[in-house]
Image (cartoon, rainbow, N blue to C red; front, side, top):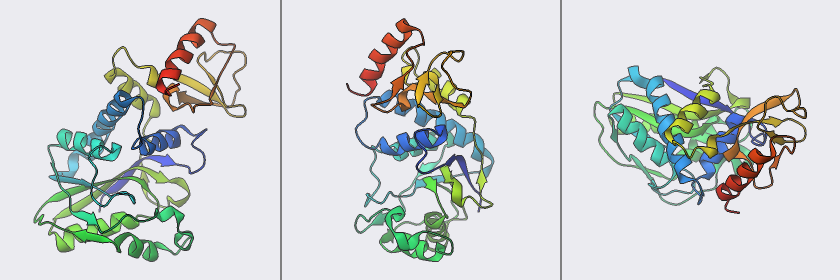
Length: 271
């Protein structure tokens, strides 16, 4: 089975690791967000990236793994929007092979499922409440998921689509791979600056969400001038829209720029 992830995810590092912050914001955007235009731009951009990564897989159908809080796909979630954009780009048919009898706690909250040697337990946990429906004889199916840990959900969906649904081939595409559990799994580590530029371009004049900045490692100050005297040598590129509600902006950067950015940031954060 072809399977890969676009980025690496470092749990607990979302405040300082840009790829993790992007994925966390994307996952949490199932909640009400103030910048839906940014979400749409990011979905469309990621769909282009997925198309480039999977163009030679000859995909005919596409689906996504259900989140733990879903009993059936909810069409307003970020993953669903991404699936629809990707299906359109690939010319693939969207399918819904699974529904769940009830919501369940996230796998990450189950202590007995953590650590090495737990893949079989995780597979049983992932499969326990799923109901499969559909005939996909001869289909080549792409399964989308957000964060891959050990691949339990992917294994369940692949087996069901082929053994029960008759699919000819199943591939997996994950937004990110948990970095501590990567092993030999393929992580593309796509260029986040190219991602930012492409998404920003889709938003036209209103592209403040994707404003580029630099985040200092120790004090978490966000700078907009790469040559700022206060910027630390150990700093990482950042996006303004990923700044938390209590995020700090460097006072040494241009005051006029900061004034405008604070006003726009307040709008993004609903303040």
